[in-house]
Image 1 (cartoon, rainbow, N blue to C red):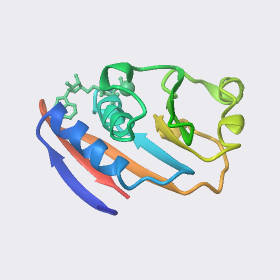
Image 2 (cartoon, protein in one colour):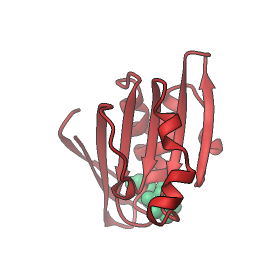
Image 3 (spheres, rainbow, N blue to C red):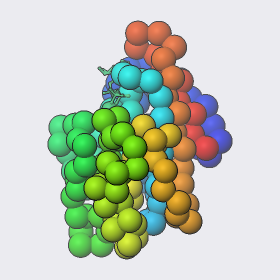
Length: 140
Ligand SMILES: Nc1ncnc2c1ncn2[C@@H]1O[C@H](COP(=O)(O)OP(=O)(O)OP(=O)(O)O)[C@@H](O)[C@H]1O
Ligand SMILES: [Mg+2]
C-alpha cells in the first residue's frame, strides 16, 4: 500500500488501516502522521499500536509523550504527539534523540513539527477530512 490513497468511511475503518500498516512495519521506523485537528491521527495510531500487539486501542490517547509499551522485549513502540510542542526547547525535553538510540517503531502526530534529523526510514501518513465520517488517507 505504499504511495496509495484510501477512503475511510468510519473510525473503525481507519483503525483497520492502521492495523494493516502495522503488519508491514519493521523497526527502526518512524511513522509520521499529519493532518488537521480531528482528521484521525490518534485513531490511526490506535490501529498501529494494537496491530503491533503493543497496547490496546483504549490505551492510545493523546499523550504529550508516552512510551506505549515494550513489545515482547523485542522493540518499543512510542506514540508521540507534538501538537502542544513549541520550539526547539520543548522538542529537546522530549529526548527524542534517546528514543532513536535503539530500533523502535515511533509514531508521531503533528509530524510536520518534528525538526529532528535522522536517517531512520519513515512512512508518511496524511489524513484529510472529506466529510463528517469520511477521511482520505495517503500513505507514502
Ligand atoms: N473515517 C474516519 N476516520 C477516523 N476518524 C473518524 C472518521 N470518521 C469520523 N471520525 C472521528 O473523527 C475524530 C478523529 O479524532 P482523532 O483524535 O483521531 O483526530 P486527530 O487527528 O488525532 O486530532 P488532534 O489533532 O486533535 O490530535 C474521532 O472523533 C473519530 O470518531
Ligand atoms: Mg490526536
